[in-house]
Amino acid sequence: MMVENEEQLDVQLADLSLKKDNYEGESFRLHMVTWNVATADPPDDVTSLLHLSSPKSPDLYVIGLQEVYSGPLRIVSDIVFDDPWSQLFMSTLAPRNYVKVSSMRMQGLLLLFFSKLEHVPFIRDIQATYTRTGIFGYWGNKGGVSIRLSFYGHMLCFLNCHLAAHMKYASERVDEFEYIMNTQTFDCKKAPQIVDHRLLFWFGDLNFRIEDHGMHFVRSCINKETYNLLWSKDQLTMMKKKEQMLQEFDEGPLDFQPTYKFDLNSDTYDSRLYKTWFGFNGKKRKPAWTDRILWRLRPKVSLPDEQDENKVELDAKTLKQLEEDEEYPLKIRQDLYTSNMEYSISDHKPVVGIFTLELRKMYKTPLVRLQPEGDWSADIDAMVVYSPLQPFPSSTWDWIGLYKVGFSSVLDYITYTWVKDDEVAFNEEVIQVYVSKEEIPVRGGECVLCYYSNTLQCIIGISEPFMVLESKVAIEEGVLPERINGLDRTVANDEFWK
Image 1: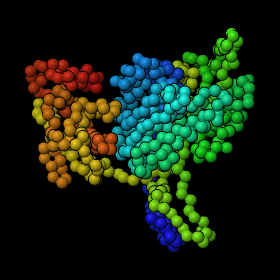
Image 2 (image 1 turned 60 degrees about the horizontal axis):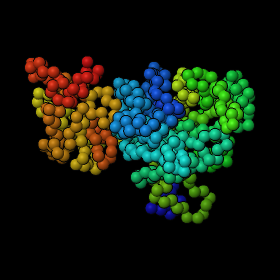
Image 3 (image 1 turned 180 degrees about the vertical axis):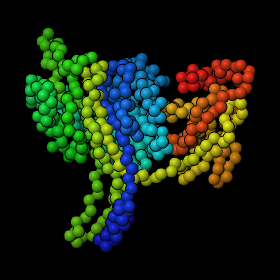
Image 4 (image 1 turned 180 degrees about the horizontal axis):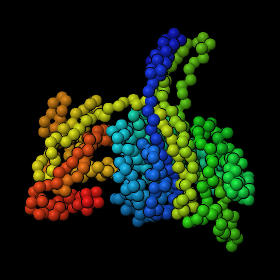
């Protein structure tokens, strides 16, 4: 598809301008965390880190950790169970109606994406991947993990990196970042590479240091909170001036004290003496802003110069991107960028970034509407009714899960039923699916139903909450839940039902 003359182009741009004038955007709050946890076990409480006491609750949480403990035994256990850090964030956020939509782990790098339940059916095209850069690219102690997805149709990507350490490797850090950006690809025509996404967040322990200034001057500036005197010698700031790729990224002002390196369990910057070869003492680590959060809005398509007499040529992809930028604008504002000094289990302090995303939804209805039919209890077989609201690639591997209200992830179901195998009746508008009473918890409780699309690899419909009634038969017979089935043994032990 080519636009062959300026008159055609003017008509299309006028149409886009009219759509833009009718633009109605909605705001979404994004809470991001990056933290090098230095192999420490999780703290007991992350209320402060997640700002759970704030009157404004985020729509999305994105948490990137580095140096999560990855010893051989822990790696084996983490294959079977969620790692302790994931468990902590899931158990903290699930009661507040947040669901872990996706996660990615590469040895010590961990990336978690949480969403409010109401947004989950509108988060699609979810993919996650990783890139190793440590020790010739074979060892996963350094590199990047990413999660990409569409949020109400807008393509977002989150890239959590841990780059090469030490003062002298600033250029190597940039090379590693560019390598990660160029090599990570996704099975998506709209955004096959990281740079194709509408909005990209790049964060993590990027390991950039403060050059030239001596230890005394740096610590003096920190004590006086004159951080601006250090900015010009921050390596990332310096590298942005000469690296074009970095110039496309924005970052809020570093109006917080450097987050590295601290003595453990204290707010004191590095005070230990390091033993080097032949018994000499090494230098203390100079404070630095190693832990960062940056973002990049995809550059807008530049239009041909009006004075250019040559034929105007816009390919189909470019024109489609132009239409999307105009019809569905996406704006971002950073509301907070700071460190959290409360946590002392690591030699790094966590960094928090809070953003407001303003966008126009590309779709407002889920792909599937579903609900329970009649009363549900373990005394009688149950029925789910669902209706496709839009065409989607259905599969024999699609399933409907029964979840308790406050579930933590897609896999946190009480039970599930295969959509095609247990289908009992359908017409063009309504389909009924059977659920055996043997699979329904006898103690009951407040639940939701979720339709999971195997092809799309995500939840595409969620029912309204409903009550599963307590089994009358079990009460009358005095049968304990533990003696009925393994499912109820799990449910009965959960605090949710008490």
